Structures are given as C-alpha cells and as structure tokens.
Length: 454
Image 1: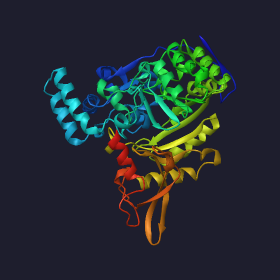
Image 2: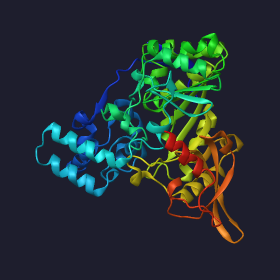
Image 3: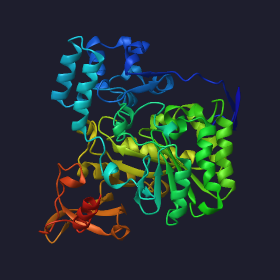
Image 4: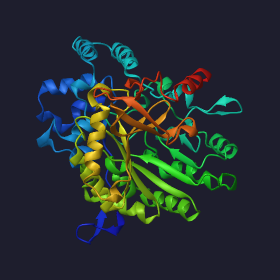
C-alpha cells in the first residue's frame, strides 16, 4: 500500500491508495468491454471498423473514472478514446466495413488497413525526411532534431501509451508497421550526440509515452544527463498523458516512489525538469488520484506544463478551455500550448478552421487571469516550424491573418510577423496564401531548399 505524501485538495485529509491492476483493452478485446454492451450493435460494429485502421487502446481507469456513460456518444472523453465512424473518410469506412462483413482472413484485413493508412498522412511536417539527426554521418533512428536548442528522443520501451487519443498525430507509431515508427534504446548514441551539440539546451523524451516504462529503464535515460560533458543540457522534458490516463503511475504503482526519487535527483543536481502533460479537457483533472499525482510530482521540484490541440467534438468550446486553464492554475500547472490539430490521421473529423480556432482561443483567454494566459497559440506544428495565429485585422483595406513563428527550422524566422489572406475555411498553414499580392511567404524558398537537401 502506497501512502500519498500529500493531502486531498478538497478536505485536507491524507489520502491512501491501494495499488491497482492495470488492465487494457485493444481492438482485439473491444467486444469484451462490459459497458459497451449497453450500446447498439450497429455502433459497436462501427467502432470495430475504425479500430481496424486507426489504433485503439483504452484502460479501465479511463472507462470507469473519466467517461460519463450516460452521455455517450457525446461524452468528450469517450470521443477522445473510442473510435467513431466519421473518423474515417466515407469511402475508406465502407471498404473496411464491407470486408469485415465477408469473413476475411487477418491478412486481408491488415492489407486493406495498410492501404487506407497511406492516405492519412502518417508522418506530417517532414518528420521522417528532415528531422532525423546524424552521428558519424549515420542517421540516428529514434531521435529528432528539428529546432536548434531541442532534441527529441523516443526510447524504445516507451512507444506505447496507457490509452490512445483518437486524434493522435503520432498514430502511426501504434499500428505495428516498423517503417512508420520512431524508437531507439541507444543511450550511448544519445549521450554522444548531445555532447557534440552544445547548442542543445533541452532534451524531450517522448513517444508514445515514456511513463509506460518501468522506472529502472526510464532512469537509465535520465541519469545519463548528469554526466559532466552534458552540463549544457539544462532542461529535461518528459512528454506524457499518464497524468490523465493512468495517474497511478505517480501514486500507487510499485515503482511510483522510485520514479519521484529519480525526478527529484535530477532537480537536486541542477536540472530543470518539466513534465509536459497532455490535457484535452478539464474532466481529466477531476479525480482525487489525478490531483494527488499532481501534488506528488510538484513536491519533487518538477514543473508541470500543459499542452493540447483544439479538436472538434471534444474541446472546441472556449468555456472548456477557460475551465481547463483555471483548474490547472489552481493545481499549480502552467498552461503552455494551445495547438491546432495536425494534418494527419482523422483530421477531417477533428480539424477546426484556423479563424474559428483563433476566436475560441481569444474568447477563452478573456475568461482567465494573467496566469492562465501563458498558453501560446493557436499554434500549428507545421513543416517550417511552429506558426502562431496572432489575430485577424485589416491593413490598407485588406482583411488579413497575422502570423508569426514561435519556433522555426531557421532560428532567424522566430518572432517575425507575416500576413496571409483572410480565409474562413483554411485549417492548416499550406491552405493559406500570402496577403498584399506577395507570391509566397518569406520563408518558403529557404524551406524548399531545406527539403531538397533532405
């Protein structure tokens, strides 16, 4: 039995949690989830169709604690984790549905699924072509170095999650195709690369979710950063959804205390440790164990920053975001990014026009104090960099969208404003056209040259 060394935020009484068994359901066990039996058979079949193309994984904590089953299918956490028919284009859905009705072999289902996935842009923003770094002139799979100061590392044991988000832009990591997957366990190559690149100040462990790993494995990757030759790597970021999908990882799992000890060790040795938590909806913050996990992490000196995309059918409402940010501030979490849903996977189902995204962001910002206005956005993680929509205005009689780079493949692009023609239908950077009669945006020629170099 684990003692949470914190108090319940509501009643100031120490909370004790029994260890819980982690039970997960994937596409193969979809029909074994008891609560789904209350849903119509036609809806369950639709889930199976989509789950054979897009990855599905959910655990009992999400099922029992986060979803309001009296509000299904409209419940936001249900839509966040369970497949919906419209997540596939109509033609793709129908092809897979017809195949499943014909008693196919697993090989036939896999072949069609792989074909349909290729139409879903599995690796957006040049991940495979432009972001993979080199050591001794050899590519380092499982690493990305897109921005000068930050290296992304994909530990091989962490390329899964406690549950999958239906909109995930890294969905291709989870469909069993090694050619679509980033992963590595080469700790020494990571250390050598970082030692040779003293411009790198931040290492981001990502996935999947590094928090699915046992602490002993995660600690191997983290403690390497304490070597003297890596003193320039000042910030350690860990991208995770565990605070939402399995807060037991920080409270009652067998190695939860050990995990917190490792985080505290990094902090005590002068590293800035930031848990990059992925929160899509305020409901994820409401359970007592989720709040206890937040308290325990913060007691190590680790900072928690929150980020999420704006996604249709889940959080495309300013009231949802305002409540999310207000709750996070109350709990000591720093709102960090308000993303635009990426152009991959079920984007046609989840995407929100950029103009509407900015309106939602602005309306939500008006409802929070200055401490909640640290969330930057709406931000597109596009090929050239992170592009922020700063607003809509009129210049010399032309209605325009004001944009700027928060991050860029060329650091000289950062914070430089540029303008696009007003477009109420555009949902991504490549849908926009330059304003004022310009032929192209200022960065496009240089970005094409980068793409040509590979």
